[in-house]
Image (cartoon, rainbow, N blue to C red; front, top):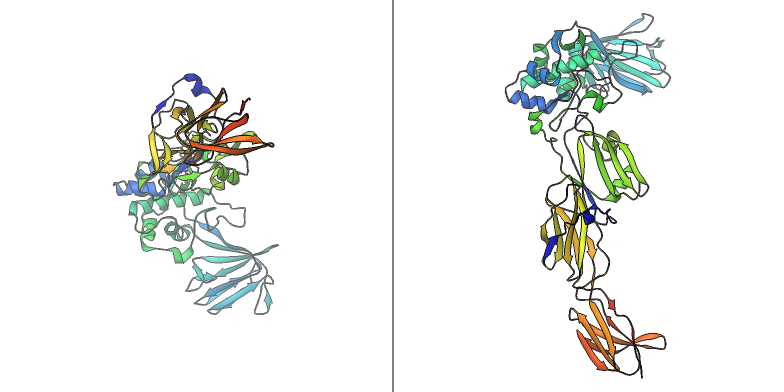
Length: 509
């Protein structure tokens, strides 16, 4: 089948027809909010011989390492509880707000909202102090004290302990086992800095035990190699203008981190949380995501809009998705990049959405004519136009698109089939390409002359009692003198062609 590109500028400038063959290709990179130190990137730097000081200097420019005074931190462990169970393998002490002290033997103690022990009603908050063995809450061990507070919605338990003992339960839960010691040391300094910069002395607690602050597992999280990293960097924090910085960090950047203002537009931009290149993040399993193929219907369902015909990403200064514009049957709608990240359950806001669109060809194209197949390709390399044949999908040829992404291809109408666009093993939705036979019918001196191309079975039909009834048949050609009346030629569907019916002619007596 011969095919060539039509390069007329007028054709390329026309608006797209109904996007019957549209698919969107969603590609993305990284994992997490993207601000500060990429943990996989830091591990990549460590494997390339960088020490923790240089790693920190790269991800937190304009900072230097200082020394912070030791202090205690308060970590929320539980809230809105009807009761809590505290366990110790050694005798321990409970002190209430009035200074009453209860010495308890090694045992399990259940406190409910009445806060009564040994028949004594205690005044909250209660401080539970360990003896020779650490305390356990719900059978998970924690260093330091447990403070039980009574709140209108239930009991709250807060773990109070020295900063670096808290970090012993943080660093190993923030970075995997088997990593380089320099990565653990960089993580220790970043986590210590983040902790001290985000304390809330006027609140009931300073830190959450999860991703709202930092992952904290208590004693069960501790590992010798991360304890060594904390010891090697004892007291070290990142400082800018004599203040400890909020040293944010995350899992994987995909190749470049984000500025804090791009990730969190309401945050104040600071010179140590800016977008930087992250060349060694390539070792991350989330460095690049598998491509997702999305139909317009899937995009519409996720974003709760209808009639989706196009999707475009608006980048911020860090090269990430600040917003996504969606063209619907009601016009363009704009969604925040983070909202789209959540709707599609993505790993970060560092994503692109490309488009493969094959416009619906004209319906019932006549055999032997030529038709322009149009569409557009955005954000991709050379896509291919494919046709369904007896051997399956066959590439007609790669497409050369205009700077606007539009293309137009002249295609000879030979047989009904399907067309689609393909790119790197990904195919768009197929669209029907319907071809009808070319039928001509003439009458001359009572003789009917019919020609069907290609040579297909045809029926000669006569109008009788308001109905068309077959009165003859042939293949490809018909020539015969017939009785007076109204006649037409009908070509039944089949052999790769749609039904065709000629105009009617009248044979007079």
